[in-house]
Length: 179
View 1 (tube, helix red, strand yellow):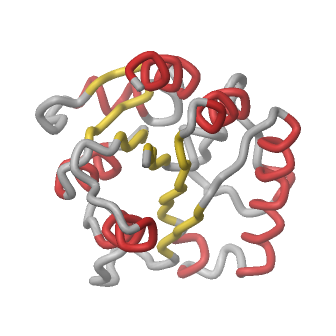
View 2 (view 1 turned 60 degrees about the vertical axis):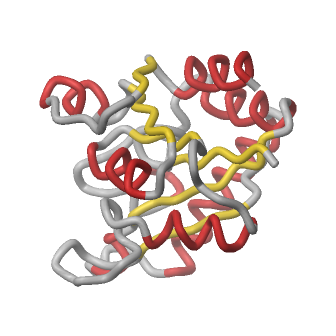
């Protein structure tokens, strides 16, 4: 089975320092819905792993998160794409959970649910914590320059073997060409 794990904010949709708190604030990055469709068409199962501390902060509730994702799923569907599994961490950074990236608990759960090893599984993110979680599971970290990606790249300290792409569409084309 071919699996790819994506972060949400800054990878699929524009990010915000004030969090994405409503469906109106969720806007896809151009080309990202089509990139997910390309991955699906190439036989990849696409899992989403996203920190959503806005829930723990009381900035949005589960119903609103579901509305945001309904909007995202519709945008992906219109492009011919889908998310096969969705995982999120609702905790704030000061909570010592195992699921919040850079810890690998959320990714490990994806591996269990798909009954697969995460060794060399591509994990696409725009922040260092996304890449660190991928590296901890033996996955292949892929940094996109959208969202916080350019700042992440400039700050350095990326896990060994991190691959860098302009955006999700660029990363998807690479992954499809290698599959």
